[in-house]
Amino acid sequence: MIMRQQNLSGVPVVQSCPACGGDGWEWEWEEERAVRRPCPACHGVPTVIADPAILGKRGMSKVSTTCGWWSAEARETIAGLPPGLAFTSDLLRERLQDPPHPNAVGAALNSAARSGVIQATGRFTPSLRPKGHGRKIQVWMKL
Image (cartoon, rainbow, N blue to C red; front, side, top):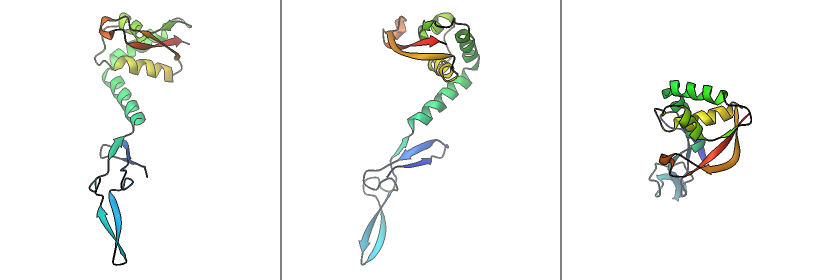
């Protein structure tokens, strides 16, 4: 059994334990009555796994908030690109100064994609930045 709940910080989580199903208890029959005991696997404390989709959105929102001035410049830069231009995150890093947080670039691109300003092409290309060490990065298309 998998249960969706919120932790003390209000973050939605998925709780599950292979032995008890996520509630932290197991039931045993003693002298024709049910007795509730803490689960031997999780000891009454079920495994808590944060929902990655929710945490991802919360993280991007946090980065956008803490890097507001950079995010605003990134939005303007993306909006000013000519329609049909294929580009990568390297272009933003070339045109703007380094963001206050390294995740700000991804947050800006994902925000622009959700707004319908750009679209992922499904293609990847090696990063040309020395710090990127040639890792594959998404190619985006300005709409």
